[in-house]
Length: 270
Image (cartoon, rainbow, N blue to C red; front, side, top):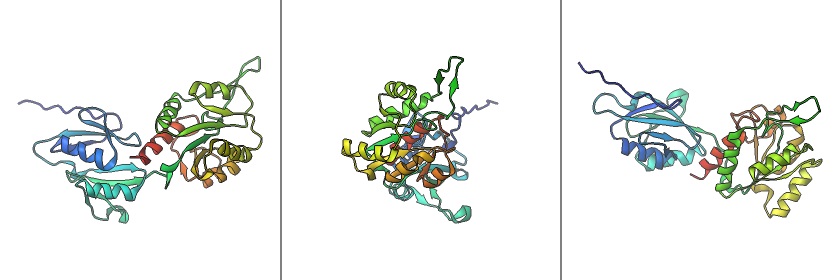
């Protein structure tokens, strides 16, 4: 008797049994914005993995519910229907489900900001957004902070979307300028009046405040955030900022906030 060994799915990537890998891959690419990461592995707009495995006989994906994050649920639902998917029953307490090519049930989870595709400028606070809000002080009084390398990748992704970015910070430490230079961003530090600075920045760059996305984490960001058309906060932001934000990242400050934002902005353009 010959044993059959199945390859393990990528970490965090559900395994979907399908009859035709090419057909299923095409469906997830066209309908839901997945990109191929290999012959059988796909990566969704929000970094979700999905591994496809062809089976000649036996049950396929019908017993599996895929939770797919999308920027716009209505738009994604239309795309599913247009590319060969279907509408499922209102299971899960009446939540609408959709059906993929092999009968798999798809739950569309909206993780977006309505209209975010029109953003032209992203403005970041520094401490608590690009850092975890801690400061390291040595015996000579020199200060240092911890940044996340994935945020550097996120800045690059956002730049390739044609969106300008800059830093607006009350912090006076030269670390702000140093990190900004590393990322290739303009930065204003030691800003005492953030709302006025944001308005002046918008005027200089010829960008409407309604087309600015502001990422802030604490009460000194509130007035500037209120001026911006789009507002994002890290998961560990002050409660008043969380209430103001239109989108709260899963990431905490200094732990990939910008990288997650890059996925959001990319998904909005799929």
